[in-house]
Image (tube, rainbow, N blue to C red; front, side):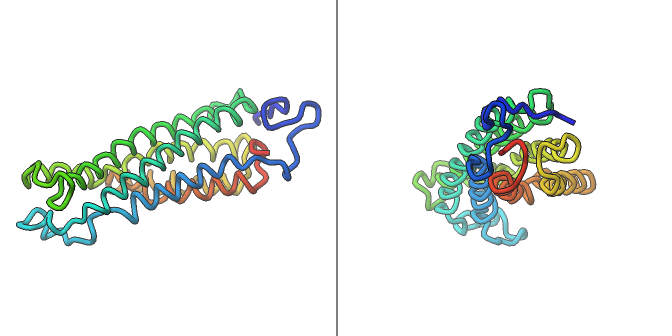
Length: 233
């Protein structure tokens, strides 16, 4: 079991962790990142339920709304910034308290990896919105060029959530093995890990990390901020 350093940031020397009434709410940045990421990836998907059989037919790109893609870009970029902020806060507040935990060091690496991947994913969505027929630079690409951007967006904003799934595995280890995170959060952390592992292994679909990872971040952030995890006291 990993031992907490009660002299690290977030603790008062000689007295152990700070009382819950004074607990920092920094994990809520993770919840905000997850909520905005869910909106940018799922709600603002952009494909608008267009049937597969009419994709890339004449007039197909006229049916896509560039505003949705631009909104996804803006909301997604904020989510990326919050992922990076969460990673920085974790390194400052959590890692010093459990310096011997490899899992604790893995969590911010997973968040940064997702931030990098999602920056490209949301960037491609913004680019497609820019070049669609009704976009600000409509006509810059013919249908062949637009088809390339469309295909990049098929899973572009979904694949990047894999880093969060890796972070979830690390949190599960911290909770169930090291007991530095509440056990119920460890159980919840296993859900995106198992879901992604099974679906990638059985179906080979690359975008499945996004199905649970954004919502998982919401639960994790709220759970750490208002729960009784030793590392967040």
